[in-house]
Image (cartoon, rainbow, N blue to C red):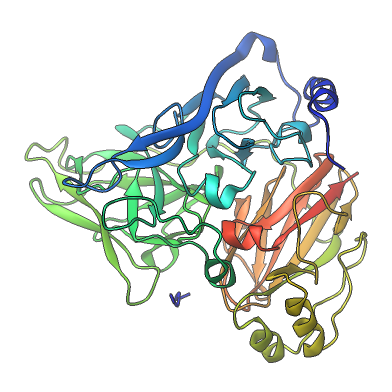
Length: 494
């Protein structure tokens, strides 16, 4: 056990409705989008990859276009993207465009926003790139196994005026549960993982490989795009005597700042853009250490300096990114909602410590998932019902359910979220980005825009956003075993 520090659509009806919806995006209007259409085709299917270092052989995986991670999709801000996804798996799949503010019909949630892509079929996703930033794509159908076997890839939307750097690099971080012969452990979705902190692997990779060194030069400035594609592992990266500046979180620009406590912390699905100046001596090595899990620190990779410096000192180029066109919420006038996360191993104990209250629906909310459990007995009854994780007292079964919240469109909303469990949860909101405005009653320093917020055990977090994207959207934990075991709900914007 690890103790961290800290109604179904038919394909025909969906295609008809998707064409109508995607033609009129309700986010910032497209400007001559047809002139900037970019088309891609990717294939989801089985493959093999050299995950573990030699002398181990290849590992059977699932992947896009035979590569791990899947091919990088890179477009420019304001362009229109069309991706035809062909399913060569033996089971259904979808693609979710994580962090991108897309029309509801393009969100890739099976049965909620689209019929799953059947084996042998192809589905075309199409939407405008309304925000620049670092995003990624992955299945939302049986994601605890499909993502865990390797189905994921980066999606980069370039700014019209990007920051100046010597080199831009993307690291897609993940981990794997492998046998001694580098085969995949076939224990996906087991109850122990679901009740605890998810499927944490024993082999960590950068871009699908175990890396020993990453070559750099003294004086070089790198923009490092980090994506955590792991099912459950939380990273806390220490770059040694380097001083990274965080310039974006979850694709959204933030005031450049040093990471809190010196660690770049990324829960599953989260991203960070860093400016990393290479300030060590030529010919030296500096280890990047993952320090998130106390007592389980390990070396991720070494920054290996060339003998030939690029320059003797770091450049003084500006590092701030231009903002994206996000509507600014007004917390003072916002409708407030309460959401409580419960369950898992030691869940009853934490509920007892916190008073046993599940919380109420909150003013302005509606649907079937509110209410107060009132006491510890209610919590025990929930856990005996067969569910493992709960949002406002309900464990999800599949992706189609009554909305737990209904949010008035184009209005500001504050969701106060309480993690009444003994485990961390990266909570992801579909279709929107939000400002993280407080943690445990204390205002956040940067009021950062995110789409996935990492909540510590027993923590209360408030987020604020304008609900400007109509439809039924998912709210869930992105530890994929927690999502599969019930920690998922639907909110409606109407």
